[in-house]
Amino acid sequence: MHLPSTLALLPVGSSAVIHSLPTGRAGLTRLRELGLTPGAKVEVVRRAPLGEPIQITVRGSHLAMRNHEAEHILVTPAEA
Image 1: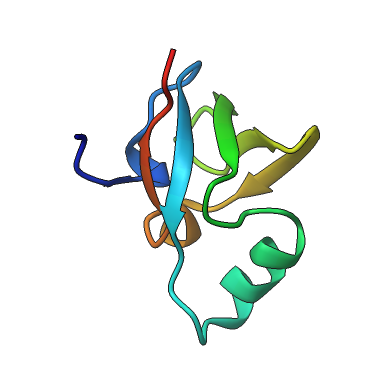
Image 2 (image 1 turned 90 degrees about the vertical axis):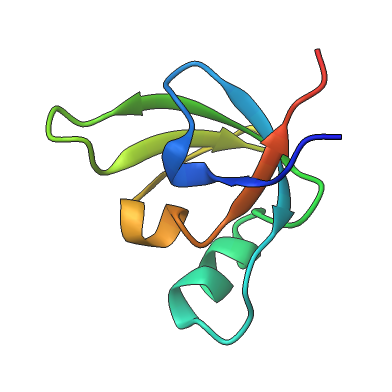
């Protein structure tokens, strides 16, 4: 069993499964509406030269977000 980490800590090219997102944060509610829900597989595609924003894929869509948003999203490593 793997302990949850945050989406902000994933290196480029790695995949994970969303474990949980906090409720009550407007920015995260919008991300939930875009498909970031528990159980969804995400992959970090790239990071901007200064480290943020990060680009991820989830459910076939490409999304960009800041690290302060990604650090609230708990993930577990994706099964190979």
